[in-house]
Length: 293
Ligand SMILES: Nc1ncnc2c1ncn2[C@@H]1O[C@H](COP(=O)(O)OP(=O)(O)OP(=O)(O)O)[C@@H](O)[C@H]1O
Image 1: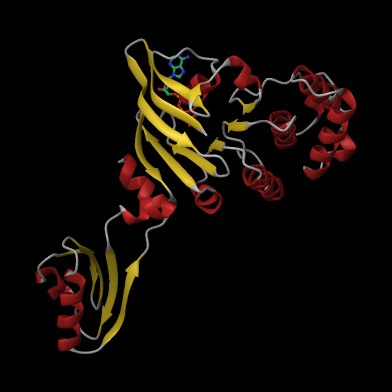
Image 2: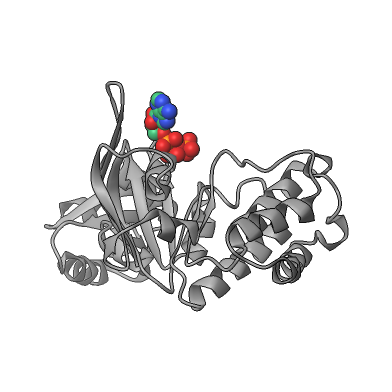
C-alpha cells in the first residue's frame, strides 16, 4: 500500500497542496480527481520525489518511501519526457534496462505492450512521427515496463481515442488484479466512476472527499423523485422534506430527516394515485460538483 500523509507544498504565497492524506491500497484502482489547479500533479510529483515537500510523508508498505522503492514505481508525469527523435522501441528498451530489465526480456514485454496499443508496426518510427494520441500510448508503455510495484499516472487517459481508453483500462485492471496499487488522475468522471474502486477528490489543494463511489454516494443528500396525479406543491409542507424542484405533478425532494420520505409517501397515497416514487442515485459528476463547490 502507498500512503500519503499530510503532504503540503507552497509556491510563494500559494498553498498548492494543503495537508493531503490518502491511501492507495494494493489490488485496486484509485482515481484522483479535481479541477484545474486543484493540486493533483503537485501531489503526484511529491509522491515520486521529483518535487520537494514542505510537510508530510509518503510511505510504502508502512515505512517511509525510499528512492530505491521509487525506482520500481511506474510514473507517467504530466510533462511526458521521451525523446522525439529516437525510435520508439530503442528508447523504451533503454528505459527498461535503466530499471534493471535485461534487453531480451525488455524487447519481448515492450513488443507485447506496443501490440496491445496498436503500435506493433511502428516500433522503429521516431516518436515525433506519431500522432499525439499515439505518442501518449508510448508514454503509457514506458510507465508499465518493467512490471512496476506501483503505478502513479498523471492524466494517462487524456488524448486517447475510445479504443486506446479500453486497452488502457484493461491493462490497469490487470495490473491492479495482480496486486499493484494504481493511482491515476483524470478529468473524465464517467471513466473514473466506471473504473475505480476508490476516489480521492481534490479541491483548492485539499482533499474534499474520498472513499469508494458508494461511500461518496452515501454521503450525498438523499433525494426522491415523485410524480402524482395532481399538483405536487404541497410536498414542501411535509416536515423533514425540502422541495428542490417542482413542475406541476412532478417533484424532486430532499430528505432532511431520515424517514421523512415515508410520511411523504403516506400523505401522497392519501391524496390519490402515486404514479412514480423513487430514490435518485446521484451521478459521480453531481457529487463532484457538490463536494468541490
Ligand atoms: N512550479 C510551480 N510554480 C508555481 N506554482 C505552481 C507550480 N506548480 C504548480 N503550481 C500551482 O499550484 C497549483 C496546483 O497545480 P497542479 O498542477 O498541482 O494542479 P492540478 O490539479 O494537477 O491541475 P490540472 O488538472 O490543471 O493539471 C496551481 O495553482 C498551479 O498554478
